[in-house]
Image 1 (cartoon, protein in one colour):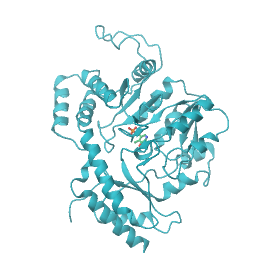
Image 2 (cartoon, helix red, strand yellow):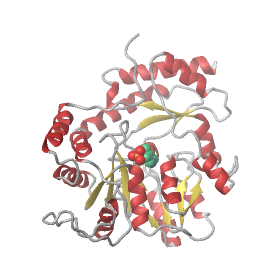
Image 3 (cartoon, protein in one colour):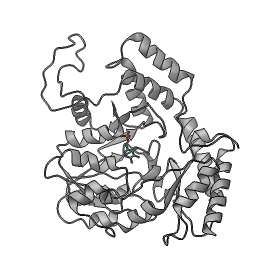
Length: 382
Ligand SMILES: *Cc1c(COP(=O)(O)O)cnc(C)c1O
């Protein structure tokens, strides 16, 4: 059998290894110039004034809302269909996530459902679902109405655009992920982006224990006052070196993703009763994290069976996400959510399959994934 294709695989090259070696040899493992260089390069790439390297997208989300004073008594709207990190960041600070069902056409927070929220909202965190931007104009309109600020979960959204502008610069701040199988990796890691200099300073401080003297005062290392609560959410120099090497290849990665997406999309268009999520709508243009194929609502095609056939043919897949977040045990036990309250998210959680489109597919990978999926679907659907 030809080589297997996993859902995702980091594409590390000589530059990554050399960058890591240089850092290790330098002895400067944190607080160094490589992280600063990565921040500057990422800010330039995403067209924002400031980028702050952090230990993960989750810690970035946490830092943004922490710096904004979200806490006990705060209410923050998050989509019901997302990575649990979006909601957990609010919950960790003692705020309450207000779950919004998603749009069946895009998988992103449905602005119509958002507008129906009763009572105040302090913040809104749209997620660009699998790289497809949320309907930002409509979300900003509701936010204005409610007096809430908007921030983006950009974990899967590098280079996604809305109205020609890049994700990460579409609201007060955004948080990106460099987890190994995302668009680019720094091993673990994330980046907060913002055009708000004051917020950037507040986040930098809270990324490192609330120190107020250390930054910009290298002449007196070890001397500092602490004037805010903060924690250790830093990125290491090793991670930044890997991240920089990946950023240099992001254009190449994105071209490959777009090409693979187009091949898969074309091939799957022939399958009856399969919903393939669009890669653009209105002002939104996706950056192709994966191809999101959703099986018929009536459950007539078993996802487990399709995944098993794919696996037998050496094709990896994933599920985004395996449950609506409010229906995970933690949230049902705490807030009493019930089946049926988030019908679109529930449909996606039960029937969606994510197919790989990453650069690791190589030359004929997209054709192989398409062929395997079509035969799996055809066999299982009968
Ligand atoms: C992966 C992901 C996260 C978490 O990213 P980490 O870097 O692992 O913290 C958050 N939100 C979304 C939408 C994600 O896909």
